[in-house]
Length: 230
Image (cartoon, rainbow, N blue to C red; front, side):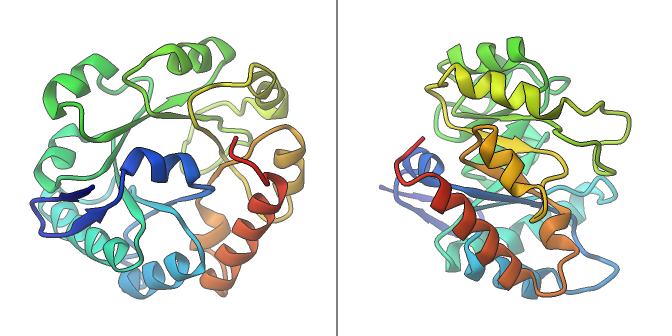
């Protein structure tokens, strides 16, 4: 199965199967201050990032559309998935294979009405009840649990801690799910011990001195903790 986005990039394979196999998901800003977004993406995707999401609230729509095209092209070169955050309109215009929505964004049914059944749809969850709801919703393809630790990317959002991660893991969700929020190399063992088998990272790669190497090391550790699909 190959899906062609309006940007002209080919998304090969079944995105949902690829999502289920994913272990390392990166959210990055546009790196406008450094001017190295393309080089950075090549490095982390070569290092093993499975999904990359451009999330930068400082961008206007025109600039976001421009940069989403870059993300789509580089992700396609590495055989990776790419995601649009919050904006169903941007996801629709770009043909993004993955779209992610928070609890205060459009409801799942609304996103499906706008975008149809094709895109992989992710949902943020911050409690056991929200995680259970996402797991039970046939329109949700994956969900994230967090933030485990308070992070500057989500100011004002209270950390949920590792206890919630353990609680969700104990329910053995049938929907692929990711731990998110403040995860880095030093905290990774605690996250894996709590039951996560997929992670979303931000600063662990965006602030790494050697992003490609950091991505490779994180992914290897996550894969080693989950020899079978979880």
